Amino acid sequence: MLLRGVWLFLAAQLAGLHGSVVVLRQTPEKQQVQTNQTVTLTCEDKSSSSNVRIYWLRQRQTPRRDSDYEFLVVWDSNKGVLYGKEVEKEKLSVSPEMTRSSLNLTNVKPSDSGIYFCMTIGTPELTFGKGTLLSVVDVLPTTAQPKKNTTPKKRLCRNTSLVTRKRPHCGPLTLGLLLAGVLILLVSLGVAIHLYCRRRRARLHFMKQYYK
Image 1: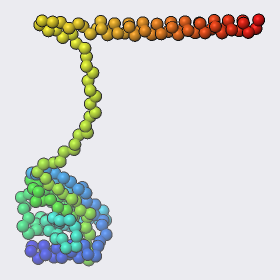
Image 2 (image 1 turned 90 degrees about the vertical axis):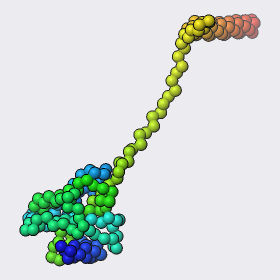
Image 3 (image 1 turned 45 degrees about the horizontal axis):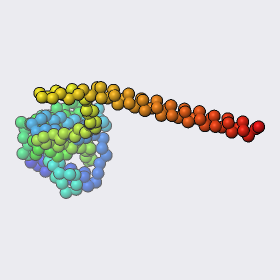
Image 4 (image 1 turned 120 degrees about the vertical axis):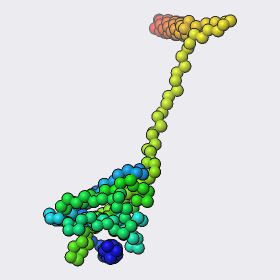
């Protein structure tokens, strides 16, 4: 098992240096979950119609040439499930289905965060999935709610009563101001009509004097 893990590590490093054609469909692309939740990652070989041995690897850091790949698990039709070195078997399982493999992680911790890859081994090429970025946090971030524009409430006139003195109701005062405004408007209109009539009479008088 140790030799298998070392060989997979070296093979992954060579594939990262020389590149490979991605024909493995891996979902989801990224996922963020809370501590102690269950995560399921899937990988499907789109280039084959028969049983495929799909390996699962993990990269704990951002992918780069000198980063490490950790072999996790693979299902073998003859030997069953094979785990990598120092893998917590009780929290990790794999479900194979012909050309499809599902990796199940239970009771995840922040230390389980990383990029998970599925891989198949050909002759001699290696094929990798695009990877799934898994982020495990204690508390999920909350989306800030947009602030609502609040309009100031209009003050309503209320008839407040005191023990020793009662204030006058604001209704008659408002009505009185309204009537005063109407009266002023009528007076202004009357003055304007009066001035217009005087100017008209003066104009007629001037025209009579001019045409005599």
